[in-house]
Amino acid sequence: MQEILNKQKEYFASGKTLPVKNRIGALKQLYAAICANEDAINAALKADLGKSSAESYICETGMALSEISYLIKHVKRWAKDKRVHTPLAQFASKSYVKKSPYGCALIMSPWNYPFMLTIEPLADAIAAGNTAIVKPSAYSPATSKVIADILSQIFDPAYVAVVLGGRAENSQLLDMDFDKIFFTGSVAVGKEVMRRAAERLIPVTLELGGKSPCIVDGTANIELSAKRIAFGKFLNCGQTCVAPDYVLVHESVKDKFMAALKKQIAAQYGEYPLENANYGKIISRKHYDRVKGLIDKDKIYCGGECDDKELRIAPTVLKGADWGDAAMGEEIFGPVLPVISYSNIDNVIDKINSGNTPLALYLFTSDKATVKKVTSRVAFGGGCINDTIIHLATSAMGFGGCGESGMGSYHGKQGFDCFTHEKSIVDKKTFIDLPMRYQPYSRLMLKLTRMFLK
Image (cartoon, rainbow, N blue to C red; front, side):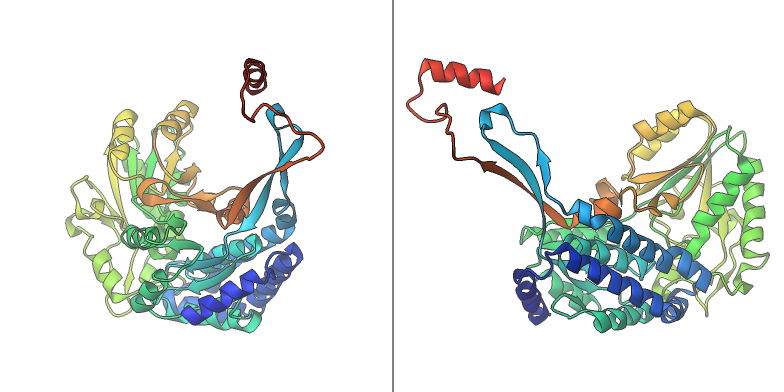
């Protein structure tokens, strides 16, 4: 691994990644390779997570291709020097910001969306002019192997390389002198990544998670709310960092919402979801046992069925949940949805803000005043009004968390910026040299200086 990094540092120092035409060429190669290997990608995602080919394209391959396409269209403009205002005191000169890649990037990706969450930050790093070592998750071995195969076919490892393995390889990589680290995963591991990066003063972007609340007030369209919440929660068997973790529903519409949610689960996943070949599975025995242990059998409203052999848990809704339940003590990251009723939105705001900052927040309402109040007063990474998870499906705005849900953002222009250092440069002319800054300082010079700097 150290040899790979040494070669990447040499490659970067050669300047080969700097021309924008080279970056665009690399992105086009990546796009074409993904299209050519779509069947292999689908098969790998099916093996690791039980994803159907449709879900694999909608949530993984298609998202990655969309990001690459957006980068190809816009990177030439983003990479240009940006002229900025020069104060009169700096006469005569021009000031500009030069977009420069960090250098050699380490991209550590998770297992829940193993293809998309590897390829999207990689594409951003390439667009910004970096080299990259990619470390996909050991929990999704089939997808990790496909990623390694694809990238090795199109890129010199001195430019883009893949390292496979588990904790030992992760630890060794974090001991190396990268110029940028991009990590997607759990809060616990994110803290370790940041601690190790701090020892070398390496800038980091952390995309983490947390308990993302979903609020349904008394003015919401209940049937549509239930439909969209069921989609967002149980997609990928609940293993989505921005999935609604729990629902806070106004007491006046709770019964109606619960009935609508049960109806929608049956409509989308069938009366017997574990017999649905397009419904996914939990990634590993360890995670399966953890999620299964969060189900309070006395509070099951619908679902609760488990397949210990295939590691599958049916979409499960918990009624009468409260803040002291096991399912409310940690991020669920599985197909279990606690529902808690509330009567006062101000109390809801205070309760959410009293905990760790969530990665996402979802609000279902037709009241504009409630939208303004909640989105202004609650801290969260990003979210939706009257929908779930789709805010991350655009390259036109950044995606990221804050507080314990992460730091930094990416996608589109923010993804380019994530892997870019902005050099502030003043180009001073030589035909004139104003004397105010030089000693000895006279009263006249001080007076002129005050006039220039006001």
